[in-house]
Image (cartoon, rainbow, N blue to C red; front, top):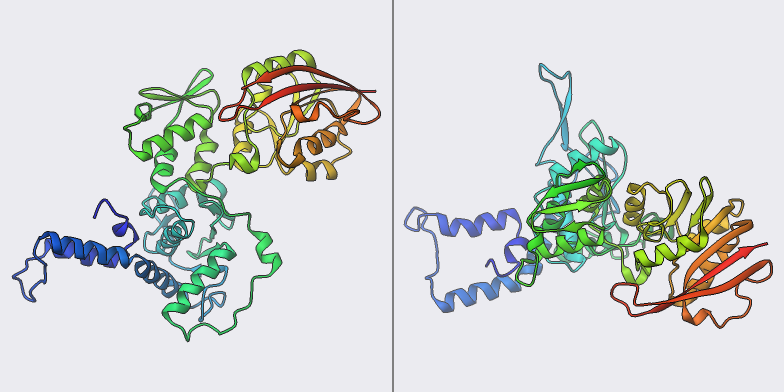
Length: 453
């Protein structure tokens, strides 16, 4: 059974029934019906349980529906809405040292834990039990406070907790629809024949769903305890042994940490920045940037050194990085430069902020259109290449230069044949070409230098 995901998909009640077969006395009254341990019995039992996985998920969905508070009108009697309310999440407890403290209750958090498992199933991930919901809720509410929304699990769910013990849970509209489809299959007469589709406004309230790393990997990453030593933050770990024979969780964690810029050795993980907020985000969201859709290919130190040499940014100059990512293109620039970064992905924003850059989370083209009044002495950029986005980002970035301002852009070779690329008012020069400077891609690039007059 451990080689399948059946036990993870089972509800707690079903798992107790399963365990009881192996712990109960078969001769005790009432007698326990335990099949003989034969090959035929094992194969028949395992195949039957594998075929019942969808039913186990249906049972868990129905259990969540039944657990919702009937005292709140937001909870519909005939199905799931995008928002649901549960109660008994926490209560105030007095002791002799603290006048009043809030204590969270596992039983009250059951609907949220169950929804997390169900959503992971809908996202097509390997279903695993969630052990950290209570600790995660305690930490996140302690971090952002009561009555504030907290997003989870690749934007599948968000919740907020009130001091009276109630919790508002919003699920992504796409997931709410799938929950209702399952509920309709269980109790066909409970839901209206024609359900109202989600409005455009409801859909726009939720960011797009993202794939997540599994719960176990996230939990281990979030529990890493980093200690600062001068300009480094390190934590003990055994992730350095993640090689060909390592278990999947260890390999995933090592890959995630290296993506975030950590040095992973046999016993330690070391960052050049404080990773506290980054690890907290990984723990509750679990979503990593989609490299292809975000066109995220970090710049090498060689590219950064070259771009820094031709821009020659001085102390106090204002510099714009429209696609800052982890700040890799800026690693060779002096710290005295005033950097403004724009970044689409939340996790990348947290990394660049942890490195000391002032980063705004936004789509650069939208930000540029709304902030034309903002001008800069320098622009350095490594824009996304696909779908002509490099040219669009280049033109938008150049519009933010002051007269006499300088720009250096890492661009695909396909743009070097375009005459007057930036239009009137700019002096441009194509500089050096670089090959194989990005991991996982063999693209060649060339640096464009421009001055505005």
